[in-house]
Amino acid sequence: MNNKTNHLALLSVMLCFFAMGFVDLVGIASNYVKEDLGLSDSVANIFPSLVFFWFLIFSVPTGMLMNKIGRKRTVLLSLLVTLFSLFIPILGNSFAVMLIAFSLLGIGNALMQTSLNPLVSTVLEGGNLASTLTFGQFIKAIASFLAPYLAMWGATQVIPDLGLNWRVLFAIYFVVGILATLLLASVHIEEKPIEGKPSTFVECFKLLGTPIVLLSFLGIMCHVGIDVGTNTTAPKILMERLGMTLNEAAFATSLYFIFRTIGCLTGSFFLRVMNNRTFFIISVLMMALSMCGLFFGTEKWVLYVAIALVGYGNSNIFSICFAQALTSMPQKQNEVSGLMIMGLFGGTVFPLLMGFMSDAMGQAGAVLVMAVGVLYLITYIKNVK
Image (cartoon, rainbow, N blue to C red):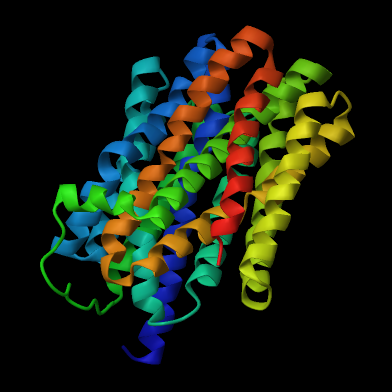
């Protein structure tokens, strides 16, 4: 692969990371759907839970699919499914329409997250994987923090003839998704053939018997649960304790992603120059402090600082856990990637539990569920090399 092609391939892969960030619109979107359709917290939280449910079903099969059709083609397939998921809400916003759209968004993202991370290692050919994955997460986070702003802008505009209001968000990301698909399809990425016999479904799951793979899997479950949980719950906390409207409180989601974006950008540097375990410890301590602020805070500045802390702290957890598992079994990267992305199922488990807890005892109950995830990440510190 010549140098020019390599840079173009890396650019196309980074645009795919931006498309990967489309999944994070589910947090602010579920709040608007809740308001539009008059839903309870536990019912509204079905939407983010549904998105991440498909990671449980599709992640490992996607790892096996990559062995057959290659990583690039699998990413292209994921982009096509994502485009379809973004197009449907442009046509309407009934409960059934949004269920279908969020399901397809989850399926497309499961395919993309499983195949795109190993594709990065193919394009890099021996570069710093953890740092580059973190930079990819920075690009992804840009799409994530733009989503609430686009939704807020759409909610205050009259879009002629389309009647999209906040759903203009889907139309904008649909156009960007088309660009990402065309660019990736146009570049040549040379993939090495799989050595030996591809793993069976059962053999993939047996890899969870390797301690670092299982512990990293659980770490990613907690990371995503906290990520989706904060994304969904932060505006509700501001509405509950400060009496804000949804349009005012939607800034909380953007604040979270702004600091997650800053964390990914600076993390890609720190992971090159700092001991990974030290940086992981700092990140987890920031998250622990944020849980205290979200649980006890009643003033705007306390809640904003807490949201910023969890945004920065949670920004590099995925990359570190993913890289620990992937580098531990270099000969089984596709299979390990499938298992790690299956850990995004945490985005289903946490919001469901948080919805029930918040209906029972307010948003403090939702924070308690996220705090359990932070406690696990503290126990994971000893496994970071």
